[in-house]
Length: 261
Image (spheres, rainbow, N blue to C red):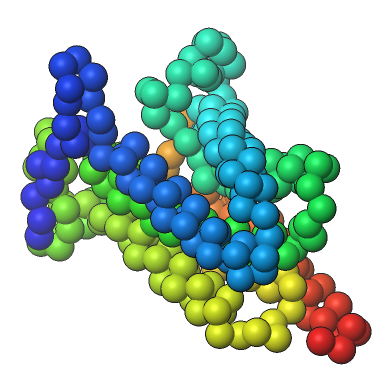
């Protein structure tokens, strides 16, 4: 059993505080940028295009994740208080929306840049899994996205928020899952040279949201309403992403056979 008294604030400068969540999120983006630079140089792509792409992705991630959280998990509150939607510093980002935001951002970027979507998507998916890992560790520091009580001696007691009973460290379950996916995708990218274009893109969707489906039962329901189903909101939202990922893998494999690569 672990008793968490972790302070979400990493350090303060006067009245300005830097939180671990923000540091980890930024750290993930910095490492991801370095990985993407390596990929771009290997393919002899313009690294200045990468700088523009990451601006698109950052904006798309934040907008997509924020809107999804507000409109899917707490619609009653945010539709009644629309001004609260822009207050992202109060917390509340949904990964499903972040994914959609990134895809839209890449498509907008491609309107002014000549790259193949699946080629670019395969590269982006590798560091994306790492960023997801960092975000979930940040959630652990914030004592948020809590797991269900374990009703045993196993688990984490989030003492900082006044709890005295252990919960499943669901944030760390997801962090470990996403890190394993990151290693899988990185290995696939580096060592499987004749892979179908789009394979890594499909794998990220399939693996990440399958992991999400498996871990959701250990988490406290995040939506402020019930689905009246044995599946919660997070699981129901994951199903189309899993099916989308499988479809991408199948299409990529068929296209690869047809081109004879």
